[in-house]
Image 1: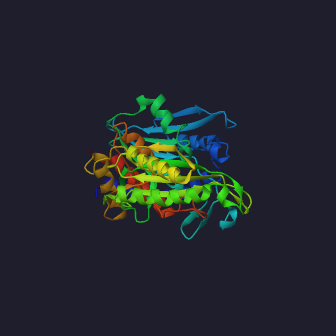
Image 2 (image 1 turned 90 degrees about the vertical axis):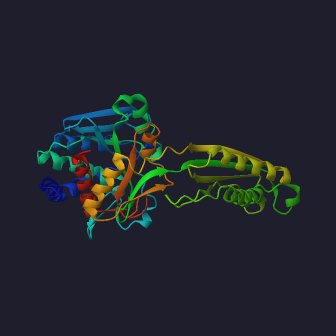
Image 3 (image 1 turned 120 degrees about the vertical axis):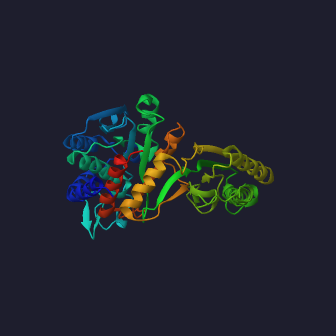
Length: 412
């Protein structure tokens, strides 16, 4: 390791208290999107604009996306740039918004009052995505304070609306400000944590969310023969479609965790409020994560085919509607520069053996891959995002900052 790299790692370590203070302030500002009953990211963005100014970036831009559902009328996206020896950009992309706390009875602490205990900070948004938002800021500060000019131009993007679709965040920027991005860019998205930090995500499955509505005939519970029990028909449909999908799409790809496509019935809407009535309508939802080797249209054909079969047999009407569809983006090559850079820097900081994987979740990385910009997803954490008592391991925040700083310093 060069003396310069040793120095930057030591500098990051010296900033640990500052990082804890910054994350604490972020936790105190509940940046919930309006879909989740919140006021958006504006208050947190104001705080972070001050943090960015104190670091001394060469350029800071703010992109306010109109949204009349929040008091400020806009959803802010912040971009901060530290110029490097090359104009080629290394993006570290995090998000400001969080998910709701959920049932407070399951929390040991107030989710919006950070508590530091046993080397961890507890609070909503600590791991997702506060840990690495703060880590990216202090990677840049360590470089700036050390008067080190990075090899790549380091650009941080603190985005809005990640938790509810990104229409007011990355999607808007890619559509309205497409000139910000280039196919020569290198992108890391620290938004999928792994406990030992050894997993680097380079591929994602297709996502297909479906709503299935079964219409039968409602009658009194004592005369079921006069009606069509929509709930019963729905249960038959679940069993048959489950078997058909698993039989029809059996391939395993060891790159992915889990290695198969998954087809899960999840949410169920209430049908009737009382016990003694045969329900005439039943609504269920399916979450499908499909390996890239399969066509999403072929999965839909199975759902529609089973719906037609069960409808004919039972006399019920079954409608299948798509709620969300994201076809898999091309994977980032394990031999791409961003992948190899991430592998090397993670290994140097955490002394592990990084492995490239695919996942079933959806991240910003897929949006870049669809635009032929290579991207990886990585950070180190205990996978407690969205859970009660969410926490960030403080040493992970410091270590991830070291990784980002070393990536910026890597000569390609």
